[in-house]
Image 1 (tube, rainbow, N blue to C red):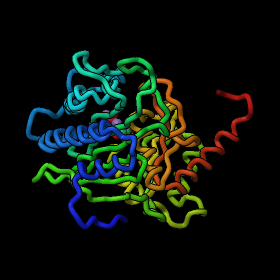
Image 2 (tube, rainbow, N blue to C red; image 1 turned 90 degrees about the vertical axis):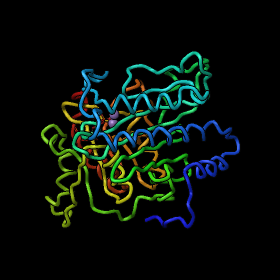
Image 3 (tube, protein in one colour; image 1 turned 180 degrees about the vertical axis):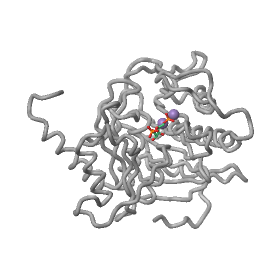
Image 4 (tube, rainbow, N blue to C red; image 1 turned 135 degrees about the vertical axis):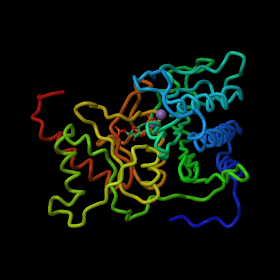
Length: 347
Ligand code: AHG
Ligand code: MN
Ligand code: MN
């Protein structure tokens, strides 16, 4: 649980206070966070009136992953890009909605950071007025390319300088970490400010007994994954108190609940998606950093997400996020799959 702060702390004030923790900070990093907060306010306004204007529904286009692109996906993607393309803060960007690295337009200066983002997460739910979100990850530029490169994007999650998400739900919240804890801000639309509402978020221990996974994929799961779900359901005698199942189908909403209540979110590998469905760079890695900073953990069922070296911009990964004990227990069940495969059989 977090205690309500005594005074009104805007996200701008909080970012400045976080910047003071990094004496080498030049302010550019803080400006990136300001611009993301501004973009979030603009996206929130559109999401919250989506039902009233012709911004729902799909576009004719299909994105690089063969998925129908929703109008709000494109809108959110452009709002974020336009908020950050001109300030000389970034050397390049990468978005779920674009196959390749996004260059800073030539008329603008470049900076020393990289932004990776999922502009609208859970967009298949938007027409049903279910919570959706934005996820972002910030790295330092590491290449000597003057205007950024793929190399600057393909960095392990542990090198992130900041990560966060916005959840557009019953209220709009922005949650972020710069490596000094996890802090949540709630948008007060009457003044257009994100106000600190959840300082120093920690995943509760013991957390609520909640597991979150799309059980429709059961037939494609490994034996270990099925045995873990049976354990959580109390099907076997080792667990006499079944967990509750909660699955919204928007990663940001399912993760936000897991962060505040505890439990585990899973998107396992399966026979149809051997690397799972979710993206390493702009879904798994930022949320794994937040989970770890809040006392939890994020793995691919075996390795810490933050230790995985990305090889491509949109690579997928199985994902287990939440209470450390449950993520570790899932790993134990899955490890038995690996042990049962006789040496030399299968990849
Ligand atoms: P996005 O809308 O950015 O493509 O993400 C959708 C993801 C994620 O939000 C959610 O956890 C997952 O899709 C749900 O997938 P299933 O419908 O297969 O359960
Ligand atoms: Mn997503
Ligand atoms: Mn998306």
